[in-house]
Image (cartoon, rainbow, N blue to C red; front, top):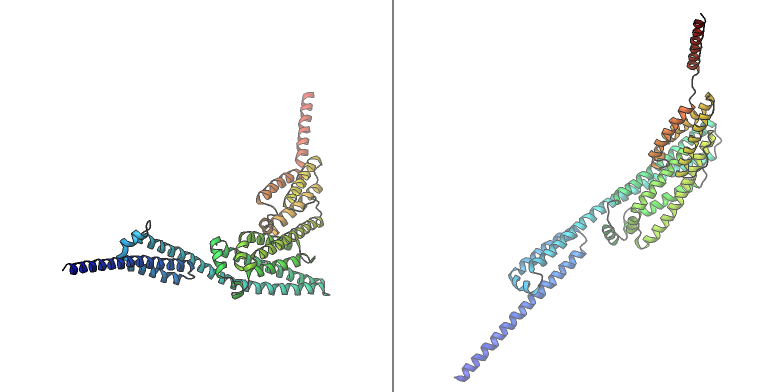
Length: 408
């Protein structure tokens, strides 16, 4: 009997130990399974490439939570200081963050695709205009036509150049609008996800930009005598605008489209932009100086914005002082009219848009010169001597009458 009780007791202990071991194993397995599922979801969220993938993962997070609600107390203890609720909330927040980022990237991708198509159109149109301009320029160089026919060829050539520059400005504005709001994180994501993008979709903007710079450099260094000051001013504005936009978005473009050579692309384009800027500036100021000289004006030397403004201001002030010292004649006033016609007819009207956009002169400088011009006009304007003479005669008559009356 004692042996039976002893055997039963041992069996109960063994059964209890087995149950306890199974329970402990089960608790351990619950914790392990949860942690494995949690890490798998966390990794999947991090590596998700589309919003649809995030939507599927969000459903899996809800399923994970539902499956483990009956073990909440166990998991709260096992995950301390985290809890089941807080860990699930972390996954859900990660999914929301990833979804937001992917929505931004998908939106940017759509914008990039549209821009790529636009660039293809711009590139084709600019190429057509370049070919047309080259043909017209060659026709001008080889022309044996009459002066009127040659003048018409030059006019068509200059119009073609103007249209080409307008397309270039439209292209650079499209680039700026597309990329200006992109942040560094989005750029990095686009770069990682779209390494072969420039090959798969349309034209690589870096190649288009480089070709535009090369074309402009070729024109500026060709010593084209058919172009006028207004043309060089416009090309100066195009370069300034190009430089300004590249400074804002160049790094982003190189990040997305430069692939493994982003720094080389950036460095090469920066060097070409520097060359373009120097050539555009040199040609514009040289053309401006030549025009002023050909129109009988001598305002002194200048080769940049600062020296140009200083030369104009010094010229006006000197002429104003000279007008005060000289006897006022119509000849003196002609000097004023000659410069006034240049200032208002060319600088402010015919060239005004490019003078302001290229900051050849600022609005403040133009306003100051306008005031000084009015001072010069007041000093140079011929004065009528009729009234002073009549006043003198009247005075002499009155004096004569006084003398006569005094004698009487």
